[in-house]
Image (cartoon, helix red, strand yellow):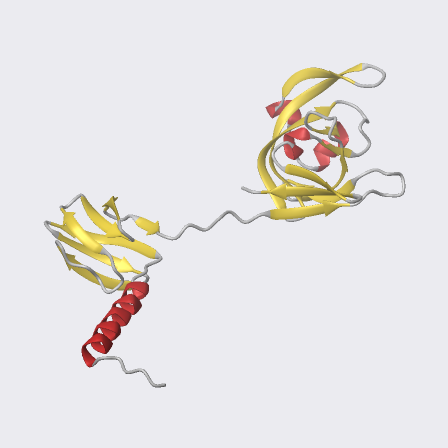
Length: 221
């Protein structure tokens, strides 16, 4: 059996289909406001220069509602917002990239990782019981940490004694692909700890998961 569609209905379907295609084509990722005048805006939309008068819509689907020399109201994706001269806006939301590092225990059951402090290489011992990154004074000097000048004097309690310490801020700490800025650290004035402890001033800013034997560190921002 064969079915026939009336000509007028076929034309309507074609028109609807065409409008759907056009609507789908209306999309812009980047908007730059390059010039503003009374009821006129000069825009750069995905690298293309457009001059819009009040009420006009660009081929990308951006509509100028109104404008003056200071700002323009644009309608993008059905939403109206005010944009100042020189504004550069990305209209599509990109979720933050997750950075993940997995650390496996050594033959003693300890978790160690190779990383860096202020761009210099460091071998870390993961210590979730330490409040902050901790290092001895010799290691701090190697890393260029000016603890005696920029650090805050204090003391810490070790397993056997109370020892002088300096509390500082590190410019950057890296473990694999995870990098954190402005991280609190403690410099102990003496030979201990023999290895830099990666404590909670770094780990507390990450999500820590156990994945089998591995410790999984996740940075979401």
